Length: 311
Image 1 (cartoon, rainbow, N blue to C red):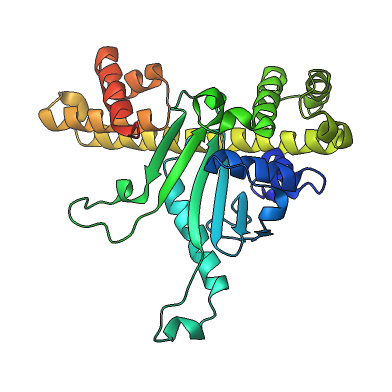
Image 2 (spheres, rainbow, N blue to C red):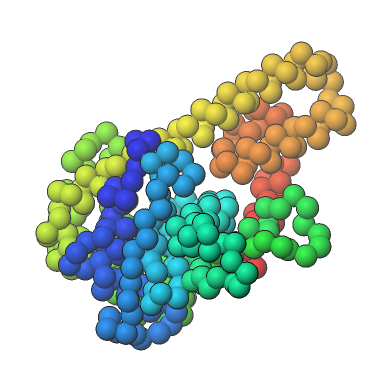
């Protein structure tokens, strides 16, 4: 599933690509984000494609130029990724490269460019605030002094749409949110037909009925690709960390760590535990790998969550 692209995402299709509902749904989402009540005739949307930005065959989810003044970049995430500001920096850099001809970049007078806006629509199972922000500067190694480059990404957890100003009136978001909940209840990773009855159930609940009636088979295929992609990425992360754990154990043995826990080895165990916690490895595995008490790991987990939580 390494060749994921736009057509593999129900979110992108429903809020952008579908010819019958994409434009109206994007408008509803735009109004929800900006807490506005604009009509289609008041806004001109122009889609902007961004190819091969970071990974081969990966593109950002939705990018629109609005009225020739805004670049609105929207990412849909089912897993929180704190590298989104860095990814979006790459996306918007590509946009500006395409927007401003090379020669104009050397003009004396400043070139006028669209203002960028960055958003993440999150609806995963991990608890997360209804509204939060991520900043590129949070990843800077040297954090002191003036920030000469910044990307600010607003994150909306639509599971908690009732807590988000503007989203209470956004029917497409509410229906999509319910749709994903129904799909998760019925997902079977071993059964490629797993989504068809779930889609029919959503239709009976009057959730995205017109869209799903038209595209039942296509939506089922997109969902199968999405869910298998997520599992593939999770498996790759686990394999990489399992390999790293084994290498760390062998290195530790070769250095004589097993002969006694020194202050240095204790710190190494703590550092290893923090790295594994950041990748959502289970407490049992971390305990066996590092030799740290479960209580110590739980305290480290609390410290990490406190530091990660955006303000």
